[in-house]
Length: 252
Image 1 (cartoon, rainbow, N blue to C red):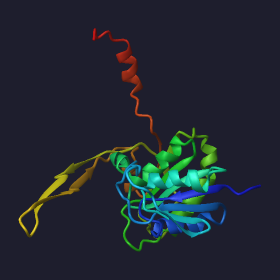
Image 2: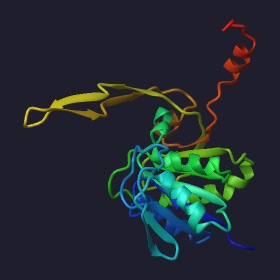
Image 3: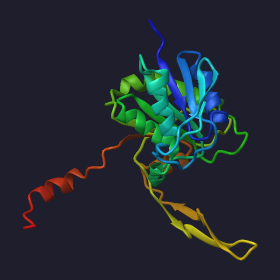
Image 4: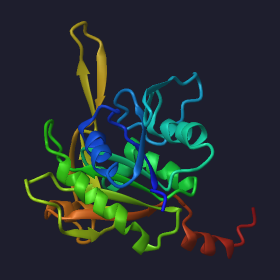
C-alpha cells in the first residue's frame, strides 16, 4: 500500500525547531514534504501575496522555501509540488507558541490549515503553548504522529480542520487530550504609544492579555496540562440569525 503524502508548513520559518521535529518523526511512516516560509511570518493570518512575484527555493527533493506567507506556501505546494496528486493531509506547525481562542483569526499557522480545508484536504494546525527557545519538540512530534494515525477514526468532513494546542513540554510523553471549543481573552493596553529618541511617536501592538478560564475551552485544557484539540470550520454564517432575518419584512 502506498504511503500517505503529508505537506508540512508553518509560520515560524522552515528552519524552526517545531517543523524540523515534525518532519523527522513523520517521515518514518509517511512521505513528507515541506513548503514553508524562508522567514518568520507570525500573525500573517490568511493573507495571500498578490502585489509581487513569489520566489521558491528548493532545499532538497522534499523541502522548499518561499518568501511568501503560510497561505502562499499551501497554494504553491498544491499547484507546483502536488499538481498531479494532492497530499493526503496538510499539517501546519509545530508552532512556537499557542494559537488558541480569538487569536486563531490572526494566526498564520491556523491560516495554512484553513487554506487546506478550503481546498478539501484534511488539515490541522499544531502549536505548543508557552514555548521557549530550546524547548524539546520530540515528544510533541510523537503525539502529532499518533494523532495523524487516529484522524481517520474521527470521520471528519474535509471542511473541518483541527486546531491542536499542546502544553509546554514537561519531560514526559503527552498522553491526555480533550476536544475543546475556542476560548477567549481580553487585552489591556493593546496599543502601546511610545516616543523614539528623535521625539517622534510610534506604536506597538501587543499589551497584556488575560484569558477567561472557561470549562471546556482550549485555554482551560492547556492550563491543566492537557492537549487541546478543537474542530473548527471556516463558514462564518450565523445560521440562527439568517433564519430569523429571512422571516422579517423590513420594507426596504
